[in-house]
Length: 115
Image (cartoon, rainbow, N blue to C red):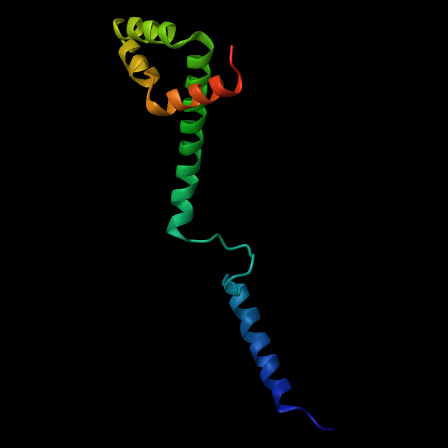
């Protein structure tokens, strides 16, 4: 009976892998999808940045729609009355002021949907 020496090496490798798995170690090839979470620093940062960017885009879009809907003069008068208030009203006025991005969204809506 003839036994391949590579077969002995194979079984010894399998034995080492099974012992390592019993200890809790894992084996995953790089670039494959596995159970191990990626430890890239960029992915942690992206998990924080994506929701913030989404909230910023939605906020600017909403401000632009409000600016378009009620008009520039009414919008500015409401923001100035909010700034004259007390408590958190000035913070709200600072958030709601008509910045260039808001004016851009409002202008685009005016071009698409003239009154």
